[in-house]
Length: 54
Image (cartoon, rainbow, N blue to C red; front, top):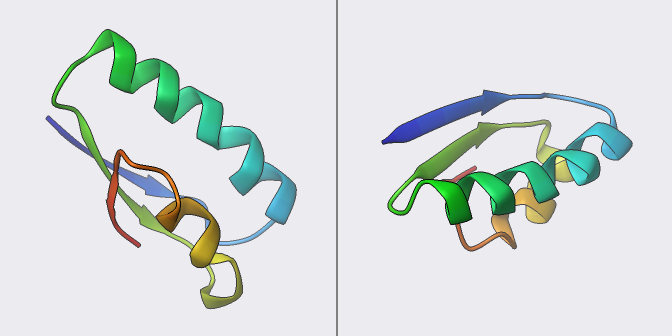
C-alpha cells in the first residue's frame, strides 16, 4: 500500500506527523509513504525509513 502525504508547510506539523508513520508501518507491514512538502522541510521526512519519495 502506498500513501501520499500532502503537508507543504509548518515545521511542527511535519515533525509531529512522523510518529504516525512509524505506527502505521508497524500496523501495516509493507506500507510506503510519499510526501509533498516545501523544499525547506524536505530533509526531515526523508529521514524516516518508511518514506520513499519527498
